[in-house]
Amino acid sequence: MPTYNKLVRDRIPKIIEASEKAYTTRILSEEEYIDALQTKCLEEFEEYRKAESNQEAMEELADLLEVMNALCKVHGASLKEVDDLRKAKAARRGGFEERIFLMEVEDDES
Image (cartoon, rainbow, N blue to C red; front, side, top):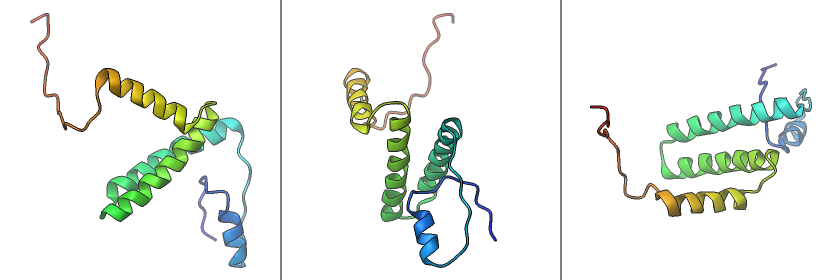
């Protein structure tokens, strides 16, 4: 039996059950849950980086957004609240549309 030891979506046990396969799960503590979400976030980001098409990239971004939604809830916020923070920060500092890559800044001590 393969071992996964990772956070999965809520309906995955039912899907496995429908295939008549045996499985084991457990409910994580709050601390374990946050750690598992952070790990899942990195996993989904790596899958996004490896995407070979726009469709694959969009699927992975959707997964990443789902993890972000769960992380927002853990921190007592919503995606809308985080998006409002994003918008405020973009208004102050800009976004990334112009593709500016900072090479270096003169040091005052030079």
